[in-house]
Length: 75
Image: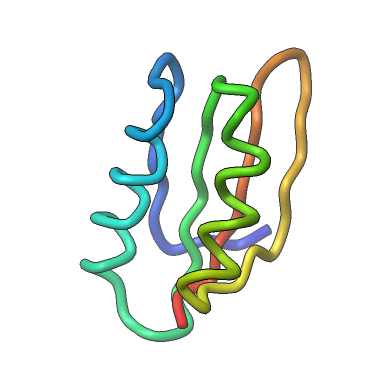
């Protein structure tokens, strides 16, 4: 998937992945896509709720060998 910015929050636990994601999205323009790499299993639910509450679109969420990958489209 194409993305405009990448954020590595591997090794961080809640709430840091969401806080750093929020900060990264604030620096982006409408329609841009942020790729986020995380290792916190709680991030799966956190990113779903974050997208619902903020209006950003969660384009994709996947997991491979303990690593989670999210693509968010800025509203």
